[in-house]
Image 1 (tube, helix red, strand yellow):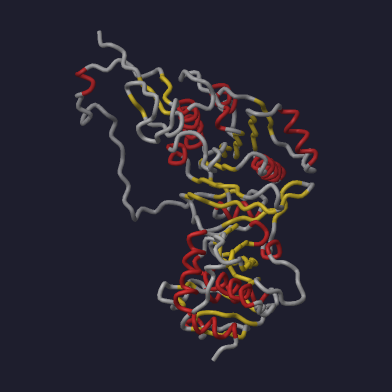
Image 2 (cartoon, helix red, strand yellow; image 1 turned 90 degrees about the horizontal axis):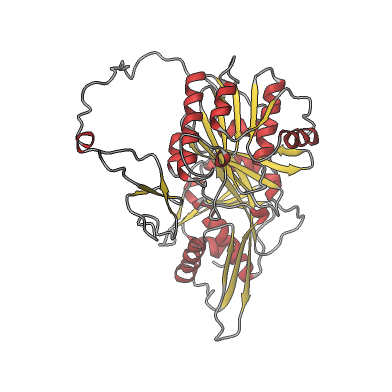
Length: 458
């Protein structure tokens, strides 16, 4: 009889080892290897067994075969449907993660209630709250009359047995996957083996019965979804719910989507009645001001196909000689700021070496668009020279290390959004001057020419 083989699974990254160690060899975390049962008896014959025969043959389908597109179910929340690519797909598995208290359960309860009021069968299973708590939240949101089927359960077997009786629901919400427990696997809920096994059974139920399953996932302190990384590979769609508790807005971003693109976002605002959709997100991130202020520039960012106007704020404080200047950035890449400052010093003759530089994206928004380079440079030059950027102007463009201003994608879309919000001028790279727009375009080939324009030189 072969000796049972032990398996030790890392609770941080999910890697498997046959010997216990204090530190995981893959992720270098300490004291995360936990013994997992179910390794089975491995014999030399089983290890060398040939898998080329004895299986069940299946049919191969050509790439050009006529297959109907999967049907989508509207959630009743336009911003959620935008992030999903048009709504929930029958038989799909969606994973949504976010910080505690960000509004994951509130958003899914609102979507479940609206879909139930539209005539669809919806089941909401909570492993963290009692059914009465979910019902009280629904009443607070004004959705107490929605025919959503509620339950408080953590056993995956009990959930699938209950839902397997009769017609399956069109939508199943599991809040959260870290609380689910499978009796086929030893270990506490939330461990790598339990999360993987429970998710696999729920996804199999979704594929076989045509139910759209939504799994709520916890996140770690660095913002990634807790549990094994394979969980994100198992599901069809991964949504990230982002935002700061101190700010009103929330952004729902698609990280993975097998049924649509990952370039769309949904914008919400947390109000007393729950999460409200924001049709014009630019209104959240622009400061209402009637006169020009030094160190501020409006930048038309692009999230997928949606332009969002944000305000970039800069402050330059001169220090006494010998002091070490500080660089502080909120909402933008600190390395990108260092590059822009270096180009301004090397190519434009401006000195920031004896000044502290503070950069902030208003409203708590996070910008990753390289087109923000020119807007950041405009804010820095304005703060250094105390010359305000015109209040009716926007700026965007990418800065090269040579000081050249490079064009960016979707310039016409950015200009159109700026024109809709009342802006009249745009400071852009010279390659975009030919765009058809209602704004007055001022093009610059180099960053030096742009700085000369702002400072009134030459």
